[in-house]
Image (cartoon, rainbow over all chains, first blue to last red; front, side, top):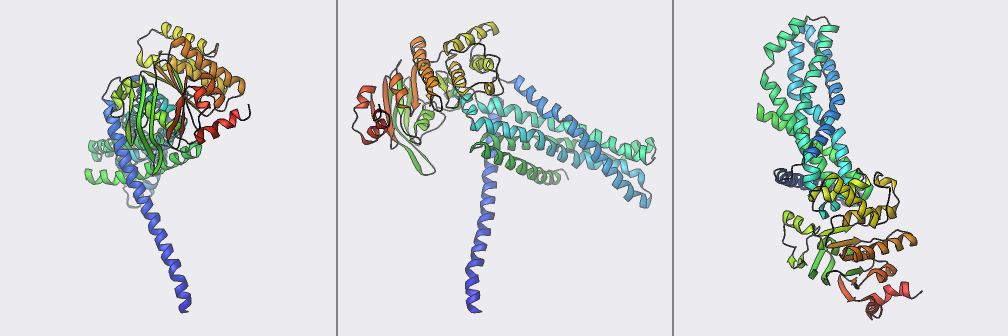
Length: 271
Length: 244
């Protein structure tokens, strides 16, 4: 028995050490990435205010990040509003408060769901493409080529992408707000039979403009952060096709996690 | 034109350059020979400021470029053109857009003037009717030639070539060698070529510098380098001259 315990001790110690190492590596990696993203943000800010101002590149990215995401964000908003209204209706009808479905959905969407889900849609669609494109440019020396031609890659490639995230985040969140509330309207008014006047008046009474602005501010911050993370992972990608794939996975995971953490922190700030 | 003094560089504790000293005279072609992983590309990246050394100096036209920041370095880089090992063409742009890119960024030319200049440089590298094609539609040799056209489109004083003949067939290799000689003859550029292709090096070089153990162990005209008694140089050259 004693021998068995002795034999097991090194094993459990080794497993514990491995677990500590695993956690430590991830914490250190996270801190390193955070420092890297902040450093890149500083560099992007520095190059943003220096001429030449690459308006064509910016419009190209606004089109890609914003216009290109209209359909997916609109659809996500519509069905989120419909699902949320359906669930809220079944809860509120138990105590005859169906008229609260509109404002409940509107407040939740404008404050929380629109910025968070819009950021996740930007991450999946534009962030992944951005990370892959920049990573491929890095490993095929296209980024180095820009530098050798006396063109700052940060200014040429990153500034338009980060600005597009910052500017299109709130606009896409507004679209999400609109289609989300319309989805709730469809369920509450057209499906369940609530009067149009009740639906709209209750929203007007209860929803405050600050609910909307809170969501838009969040959407701007999230748009900025997810594009910064995508740019950071792609710009510093190494190791060929496999490295670019890993960078994209890391960008997606860290963007999603960052959005939820920031959502909580910004929530504390607003309330 | 280019001087490197006591250049040291390490990555993750591994010393890659251990006191490189090198001089490249204006209007000449210097080939840096050395085995894979000997630090040739690292040296070249220091010369154009893509890497900062642990210590040492790199002079371009008498100016030490090591302490320069990004903005100041942009001014120095305008003197350079660089041909990358894999051409490094922008794959989202056509051949014309790739070659015209440095002009759009730094020269105030009309579209017609730009078109004329691009066609002229493409003709120098022997390419016709490819301006509207994308890099993915070109062969490796053609991509390298487009890379050279892009590197010389602004008539730079210095052209850097990173392994220009690696992975090419003998005929295309010969064509690229001719291209380097043509660029020097027609444009009078100073060229620095990174290579492990002995035959090409002896064809295009005015001077050959041999990089081994992180430093230049031989630097002389090709005929003299061939007589070098340094063991690493002898071993390397024997792979070619031993058989020919």
